[in-house]
Amino acid sequence: MRAAQGPSPLERGETLSRFYTLGTPMALWSLRYRNAELDRPVLVPAPELERHHPGLGGEWLNFHDDDDIFAWPLQPLSAAYRHAVKDCAVRLAGPLFSWTPLVHPFYWSDDAVMGPVGRSLADAWRLLGATPPAPTVAA
Image 1 (cartoon, rainbow, N blue to C red):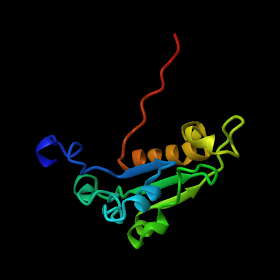
Image 2: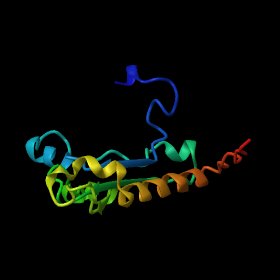
Image 3: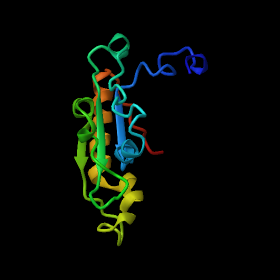
Image 4: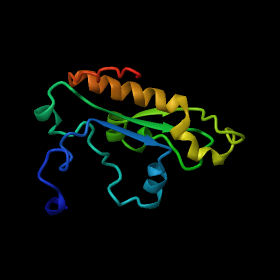
């Protein structure tokens, strides 16, 4: 795998600081593949992040709806997941499906999911010292 990676810190995964899972079935997979080392979560932030972006830090938010049969909290998987992941229970409001397992496709359009993701990304942008683009003026 290392041979296939590019030379930049981004391509090597050294700048991973934010990770969002929406309706992930990882907990279900851990039941099926008990010996697949699923007890070791992705490291967020990447161990090398501090070298590239000091003080940025990171977070992993896992969004799940109790009516989504594919989505489960990840913290119960192991102590490592309890430390690495913040589980966020949401109530998705998909049209006609908010109370059924068919709710799974609606994470991307739900404010309870996109609001925290947007705030997290905006916080990272500010911490990086980036400046927003100048407003455009309509002609």
